[in-house]
Amino acid sequence: MVEIECQRWKSKGINIKYEIRDNRNGYKAGALKEGLKHNYVKLCDYVAIFDADFQPEPDFLWRTVPFLVHNPEIGLVQARWKFVNSDECLMTRMQEMSLDYHFTVEQEVGSSTYAFFGFNGTAGVWRIAAINEAGGWKDRTTVEDMDLAVRASLKGWKFVYVGALKVRNELPSTFKAYRYQQHRWSCGPANLFRKMVVEIWRNKRVTLWKKLYVIYSFFFVRKIVAHIVTFVFYCVVIPTTVFVPEVEIPKWGAVYIPSIITILNAVGTPRSLHLLVFWILFENVMSLHRTKATFIGLLEAGRVNEWVVTEKLGDVLKVKPSAKAPKKPHLKIGERLHLLELGFGAYLFFCACYDFAFGKNHYFIYLYLQAIAFFIAGFGYVGTFVPNS
Image (cartoon, rainbow, N blue to C red; front, side, top):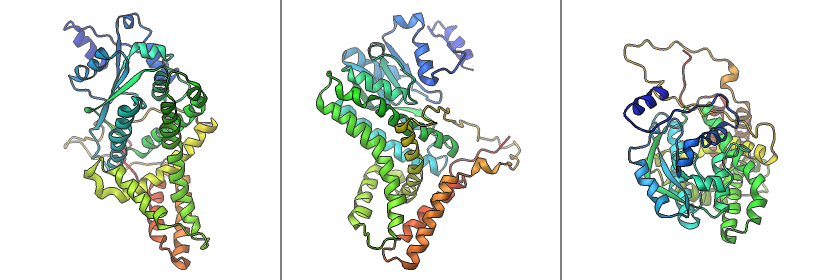
């Protein structure tokens, strides 16, 4: 389909080429590196990158390239993502809440204060000279986009985030696809931090404050501590304290501060504020998966370089009225059950029962809800369900 479309534009006199490689070496980094080897790339100054499900508007280049043309210090212009299927299911609504905060706050703040943020891997335009000076694309981690952004920043290149420019794309709507994506997004940054922390600290071309920002705020707090603290505090410490009445968590630490942080994180998506409780419970469930992936990245354990392409459904669920209803699928038990989530759900349920019988802090209200969330995820009843054909 892509090749036919390229031929159609070529017949109209447009300078367009269709390129594909015959292997997956290096995954996305390998493909991008291979693409820049073609002779005609030497005639170009910039490269725009889009994942397959992204749908840029016709004026995308008009709104991004001028930043690069008029300021030779800028190496990257990043656009914002706009989700076409955020209403597909409750899971996509909650993903929208998390990603809206990422773009509205994290990317905006990084761009305006330090001219640095992590490249999102798509919907951006790079200056080819910045890519080459930074050492090109590398496949040493599963976050080749962040890897290149950090290396380019250490060479002195600045980045611009254009929040007003939105590019439509699709969120993963099956729980299986989302878990694989979150493993890569959590494991990769932790592994990159391990590989680059010394190099960042020794760098002489950027200011001390920028180095501290990248090491402490960008990597340590947001990519490592955030996942671990969320899981340990809400899924381990609070449940376990019901067995040790001598340990009392102050309300400001257990309720007030986490509530304020959560509300501030959610204001980027005001239409979903009524889903706040579901979002908190879901994020706590996913913190288990993210924490596991973070430690895999830090320790360079078995699945550290696992790359599974995030499945997007597109129009697969849009069935014509005349079409027959799909047959009831026959699933293997292992395809739906997630034992780790079920195990933690059982532990939280036991803690809730114990607190209900003997406790005095009323933690059981939260613990029952969180246990149910773990059970729902453990039995695979999250996200869109795709029937077998």
